[in-house]
Image 1 (cartoon, rainbow, N blue to C red):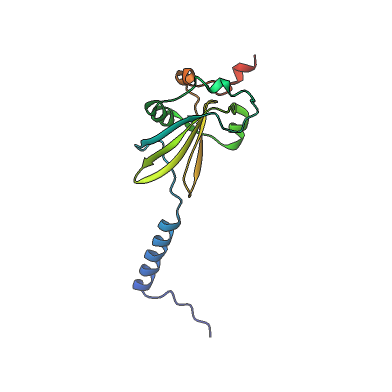
Image 2 (cartoon, rainbow, N blue to C red):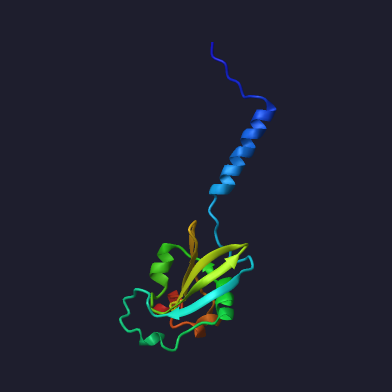
Length: 148
């Protein structure tokens, strides 16, 4: 005879608690643009691998910590398809570290209006579509109207 036992309520409760502990330990920590953060370091570079061979375009391009914070707060999540087709990939970058909820994240903002933010757990890609930031970048996101 085969018997199925679900265990006592206490055993079921303990298993649920243990499962929740494991999930909280393995759940990736992801940056959230809607939660406050602090820019702790920033350098402007021209070393992103790009099809644009000319790095002189980067000489006068830079972002401040205040601009970085505003840009990140206004950016939208993008996928690989959007990143590839809607944004220029320029050698100019603003890179550094930000902290959020006692976690440190690396960021890189490309002069083509896109960025990555990540840590050892996860990385997100963001794009800036808001035209009010166009003056801060060397090129903005492509729009269908640009084709005509």
